[in-house]
Amino acid sequence: MTTDIARRISRRRFLEYVRQSPLFAPLAAAAGLSGRAGAAEPVIGDPVEAINVFDFMPPAQKKLSAAHWAYLMTGVDDNRTVEANSEGFRLFQIRPRGFVNVETVDTSVELYGTRLESPIVLAPVGHQRAFHPEAELAVARAAREKGHQVMLSTFSSVHVREVAEAHGAPLWFQLYPTSEWSVTEQVLRRAEDAGCPVVALTIDAPAGSNRETLRRLGNRDKNPQCGACHRPGAERFVAGHPTFAGIDYSRVRSGLRSITLELVERVRRATKMKIVAKGVMTAEDAELCVKEGLDGIVVSNHGGRQAESLLSTIEALPEVTATVNGKIPVLIDGGFRRGTDVFKALAIGADAICIGRPYLWGLSAFGQAGVERVLELLQAELVTTMKQSGANSLDMITSAYVKRRSA
Ligand SMILES: Cc1cc2nc3c(=O)[nH]c(=O)nc-3n(C[C@H](O)[C@H](O)[C@H](O)COP(=O)(O)O)c2cc1C
Image (cartoon, rainbow, N blue to C red; front, side):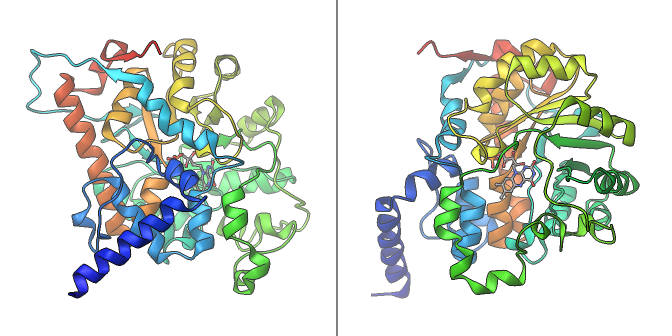
C-alpha cells in the first residue's frame, strides 16, 4: 500500500470517527457545513489547493491543540444559534437578471470616508496567537494584500499600532469596556492614536456564555501548560493583553457586561471615532441606534458564541435594514461562508459583511497565505455570483435580487 493510499484510508477513518462523535454536529454547524459541500479529502497541504473555505478546516484542526480548536469553533448550549446562522441562508434565493454587461464588476463600497475594495470585512477575533505565532499581523498583512478592512478585537494578541502598520491603512477597533471607566477611556485614546476611525461597541455579551464545546475540550485544569498564557480571576480580563499594556488597570475587577445608553454616551464624549453597535438583532434596537445618533450597526449574534436559540443573522437583517432605511451603514456577520451568502445580505440591504471563523481556519492552517486564500476564494465567489445575477456593482444589488422562501 502506498503512503498516499494509507493516508487516505486513515483520513477516511478519522472522518468516520468525527461523524460519529457527539462533537461533530456542533462543529459542523459552526463551520457552516450543514447542507454544504464540506472540505477536501485528503487534507490540503498548500493554500492554493483549496477550492472553498471549508478546505482550511482539516489542516487548521491538525495544527491546533484540541483546546484552541474548540475555542475557535465553539457555540453555546446545543449550538442552535450557530446552526441557525448557517441554515438561515437556505431561506433566501437569488433572483438573477439578464441583459446586463457584467464583463467587469465593481465590488467597492464607501464606508466611513474610505472606499473599500471589497464589502468583505474581517470580524474582530480575540487571542489570535492561539491560532498562529504571527497572529493579527499575518491577518492584517493578508487583508492589506487582498484589499479588505479589518476590525481589531480589544483582546488582540498584538498592539493596535503594530497591527495598523501591518495593515497599511486604518483599522476599525472593537471595544469591550472594563469595570473601570478611566481604563476604557485610555483604551479608546490608544485606538484613536493608532488612527482608527471607527469603534465597534460589542453589545451582545451581557452575561457569561455556556460554551460547552470549549468547556469539554479546553479544560485548563487538565492542561497545566495553559497557565503560561491564561490568567486566573480578574487579571484574566486585562493582564497580558497589549491593549492594556502600560495602563494602570489595578482597579479593574471585570469586563463591563451591560452596555447601556449611558455607556454609549460616555464613549461618544470620550472619542472622535464613529461608534458602531455590534450585536444588534432586532428592529427595536436598530431604531434606538438611529435615534441615539450611532454611526452604524453590525447585525450579529457573536457567531452563536453568546446566546442560544437566536434567529440567524440573515433572518434578522430584513427588519434591521427596513428600520434603518439607509440612515446609517448596516453590516452583518454570522455564518458567511460563500459568495452567495454575501450577495444575499447585500441584497437585503447590508452595506458590508464580516467573516470570523473562515479566516481563522486559513490563519491556523497556513498563516498569512491561508488568510489570503480564504479572502481570495470568497471574493471570487462574490464576483461570480454578481456576474451570474446580472449586477455589476454593489449599488445594483437591491432587494429585487433576492426572495425569501414562503416555507
Ligand atoms: C474565536 C473567536 C473569537 C472572537 N472574539 C471576539 C471579540 O474579541 N470581540 C467581538 O466583538 N467578537 C468576537 N468574536 C465574534 C466575531 O467578531 C463574529 O461576530 C463572528 O465570528 C461571526 O461569525 P462567524 O464566525 O460564523 O463568521 C469572536 C469569534 C470567534 C470565532
